[in-house]
Length: 635
Ligand code: C2E
Ligand code: CA
Ligand code: CA
Image 1 (spheres, helix red, strand yellow):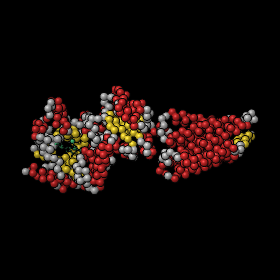
Image 2 (spheres, helix red, strand yellow; image 1 turned 120 degrees about the horizontal axis):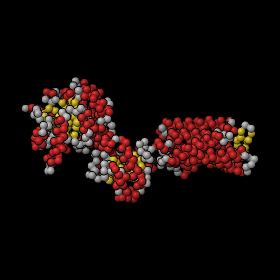
Image 3 (cartoon, helix red, strand yellow; image 1 turned 60 degrees about the vertical axis):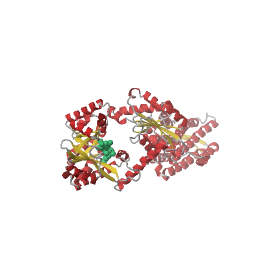
Image 4 (tube, helix red, strand yellow; image 1 turned 45 degrees about the horizontal axis):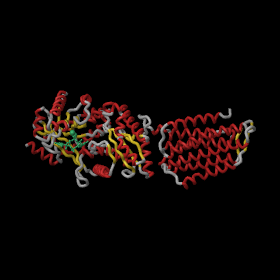
């Protein structure tokens, strides 16, 4: 059967075409060119079948019809190769569009081929061993394939960074296969293998570079992935046109995840994406762990959305869960307020982070004022980076009072930036999260820990009646597998035993209790470190988890204590009493934080709270002042 190869090849290409066009596609020029390549390849095989038919029936078919079939076949083959070249070329140009002249230059080999297709001679051979066509028209295939293949190879290897290695190898292998087949075809013209070469090339490129599923989010149907978002935003920024990113963040993602699990979280985000997409008519992207975005190109449309209440539309879509989903919508005009993808990410990170005071609003359009705040944040980041390099941190100590022994038995180590000139005092509440986000919290944690050990050792703190120092660990530090070894190495260096340190971790970090956290805690507890649960009452208490993970101390947050001293404090008192009672029954001691008045101290002492910490006793003090304070207190 003469049509066998062509029919199989056509089946392959049609399958790819079907899959490719059925899915959502990225809005890239290269994707459009791939679509053109694919369509042209499909048509080419159809025309090949037609030309094969006219060849077999040369005697019956009108000669001009036979010639026409061959013109279509050869013409589309030239065109297909041309599109493949443009596809690779545009990837190398990072999606930059062509000027008329640029495109014309690239078309020259194609135009020459077209002239030959129009006017070249074609002859047919039909013999016992098979059939084929030859002549100047048929020659154009070899010429245009060779020219464009060479140009493709130059593109692939000239600017290596534009292609990931597997992309480069895919196209190179595709070309090698194609060339091999072309040589075979040249030597044995009756084999008619062109369609096979084409189908293989299509398959290669599709699977490794243009599979639309690659850009879709793996947990959410018809939502583009973060990778796709990064590519699209970068491309748009590159093009310098103005566009608006509308981003919706699920602010209480952590609560949703810890209460309902990851699949429910994905489900809610998917609903948000669907609502945004149907409301705006644009594709939605899973832009970040807890955010979904759409990209708009019209200011009016953007303003309208906010007026019409996109947030309400999303909440409606969420039906069941809408009570629970805490949403924040932010609009960012690009490139006005962000010129690189990293800046886009940082601005959204900032507006949706806890360092940004939202004042209860759910809708923001990024403006100059916010950008300035963000820039302050960036300055702080640079300060932190510099401080890590140049020993720019110091540790303050806040005394902790024992109600039973009626003296100060411990202190909490609190980090401070030495530099107060650049931007004034910066709270660790601002710079610790920055260090976490930027990945240097481990280094910073090490610096703090070492300073505490050094201070403890050099001043023989145990002789001053200090039983242990409380050291804060960030939630990111505690899930770092290197942590136990690092802390133990430091203790060894200063010849200290771990029981002189109590590590504080926040309630939320403990509740999320990933496996590594438990593993690390166990390792450190076995070595002799104590643990305190920090900020009890601010997170989302998972009480059974708290019981599972053995804490020596529970630190009550000021937000549980202060309301008891305001008007109408009955409810607050019930809560505080129950918490104190429960913790005591579980056999744990309590540290009350934020004790500012004698009244508070008396009330907490009366309830049997073991330790008190707060401005009433002392603010956090630099090393020497702290030593003076302890000496005075001992008298
Ligand atoms: P935290 O662990 O809850 O620390 C207690 C915070 O409350 C400290 O703020 C302390 O100065 C403040 N404070 C103490 N007594 C009172 C009081 O009576 N009234 C009021 N209004 N505040 C009081 P600071 O030093 O600004 O630290 C803020 C947060 O930054 C800390 O909260 C902790 O989460 C983090 N942090 C501080 N130092 C470190 C550190 O060395 N490592 C890590 N990972 N985090 C740290
Ligand atoms: Ca603390
Ligand atoms: Ca605390």
